Image (cartoon, rainbow, N blue to C red; front, side, top):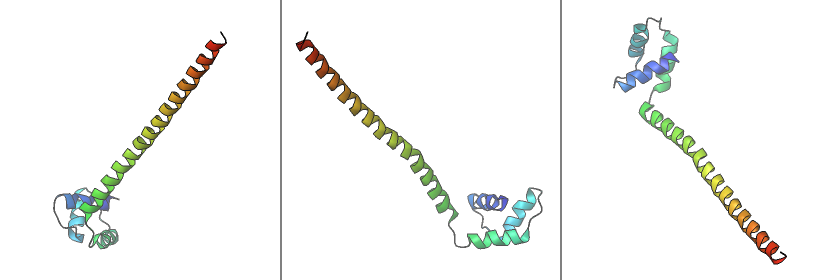
Length: 101
């Protein structure tokens, strides 16, 4: 996972994600870089727009956060309509009881 974080760091700084730059970032942390892992990450990120992926992930989080709120809003509307129906029934019952004193 630290290789992905290193790639994201390089990307955020406007640096190209290459084997050498990843190796430098991992080495700077005091860890021993794994050349095979670095090659896999660089290969997997070839032609990938990291900024676009981050933006899509943020949009997905926003959509997930809004979905429960929309669901709650629908539930509240249903509850309100049930309450209004309940009041009407109660008022009707009260009106009938007044007829029979």
